[in-house]
Image 1 (cartoon, rainbow, N blue to C red):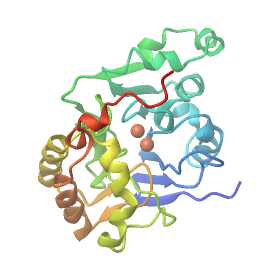
Image 2 (cartoon, rainbow, N blue to C red; image 1 turned 45 degrees about the horizontal axis):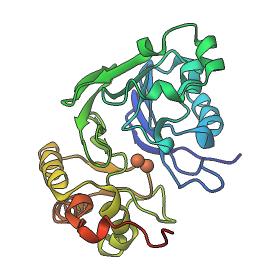
Image 3 (cartoon, rainbow, N blue to C red; image 1 turned 180 degrees about the vertical axis):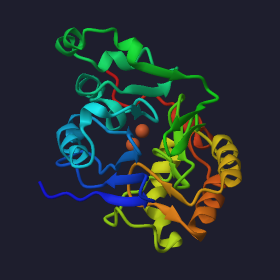
Length: 264
Ligand SMILES: [Fe+2]
Ligand SMILES: [Fe+2]
């Protein structure tokens, strides 16, 4: 398989790599991330069976998979963490996720893997409270940021202080052919993300509060888990757009809750 890692940041001792083309077939295009920080390493939102084998091969080109220290999961979705059992099997990494999902995620581990793991999967989980926390890597800090209801009820994003990259999960996601590159024209990009955000984000209040937090952080890049990423003036354009977007609960009416026609 011909795949290339895209370098988002590299100062010699701390690197952030992105993979954009590992999903084949019907699955939605997804980005996976590898952070190499001196002797430590972490993956962000590695996905499920559609990416497990290909991503393992790509990681091995940089670091032995068995050496991974952390698996960061922004939320519980299939494209985020559904191969959790296999990652736990292949590594000794801690799975960092919301405490809201820590007791649900072990349902992803098949019995045959659970037996081979020879340990309680719960001891491999690092469930975080709603406030998140800072995790120290050897050459950077990762701020695990609250991003609840954007879109999952227990949802985190990962801000890498050294690179200034905010790994934003589904926030900012788009359906575009131009993956791996920054958004060029924000106005033309809006239709590629609008439908997704209107339906998958829970409400304007969460968007507004999140945008306020991110503004204080001043990230150099916002890199979502689908599609292309934001940098430069497009960061503020995205924050302004999302804080004015009506979505999720904002759009509900009585029409949204009607028994379908066709009952006999
Ligand atoms: Fe999701
Ligand atoms: Fe996603």
